Image 1 (cartoon, rainbow, N blue to C red):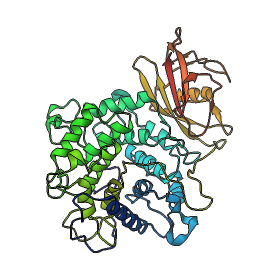
Image 2: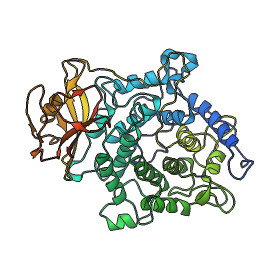
Image 3: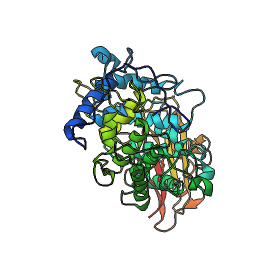
Length: 471
């Protein structure tokens, strides 16, 4: 997402970009005005539009510019409205959806951050990440990396970055109606791990620190602090929470009075500052007032706008650079426009274009993935991706649970269910935990209210299924 350096990123690279004239003087006002921010947004969006390939793409094999979708959404531009030379048949959303739907995406050896990146950007582009196609469910793809032995982590726990972006994508990529897609129990499990990785100085770094006193005592980085703050906040943690307050204090301690920059582990640069500000934005913390207005009247937004070239609109990575960087432009503009790490897509202006693109039904005979959580109500949470092959446009909860006993990743999500067969019947036991008094098995679909679980409960393509035993 930003400058290429290590696995801390969810996939990045810097292609050649056009030069522009540098912004050589500071903004007219000490704190960037709404008019200056609006101009920055207009020029920045124009620059990002110039990065679109002739075939309409922003992404391809390897590292790419797809994070531009998160910026377009934050800036009020629908991806379906972004076209090369006005050719609507090659609009950015359709081309991206086709890429994500392909059997070869993301690669032969994918990692969890590939799917998290896809989910965040698909959502911003107006593609329901759980319904990219009949065979592509990015939410289920992420679920498949749940760590049974270290509940709350996604992907190898040593790469803490994978868990941060799991929270950002599962908490941030909401339903088409704006509802929370995944159960709070899942978000809480990730929140616990994120809190456990907070360093003594109040920030975070890309690698795991939990349980390691030396790592917890080591210096944090401003960009992963921003991402971790955002992950907590999209998971329901308020900005007044003690851990968010500590993180805010850590970022404040990195302020450079004369420029408003946050001095990160790699010095003052657009990408790290962009991530930090996006974290503040996601938590509803204004980066232009209070703790983030320096003694010399500068803010982090001032620094970012000073990194932007005009009239070209691109951002440079380092203050000393003489040409723009695509990734610096993405990270910088997202922060300036007030965005977190994804945003709901705006309504398109293209005539006839829907706000959302989504698969509406299973394709009979085509294998499809569904995201499933099983919460026994006693602290035992199972998370998995279940592969089903429906015979019709929809399937049932019973069929999903049956498939989960043999076709779930990771395995062990469902080891047994009562009744074990049949087209209908109330679910009375899962994984050896039976109904008891008022504590019964209930089901929620895409964040709906929990209701009695029955084998006949209809399940549609892309549904996120949460089973819970409780009152």
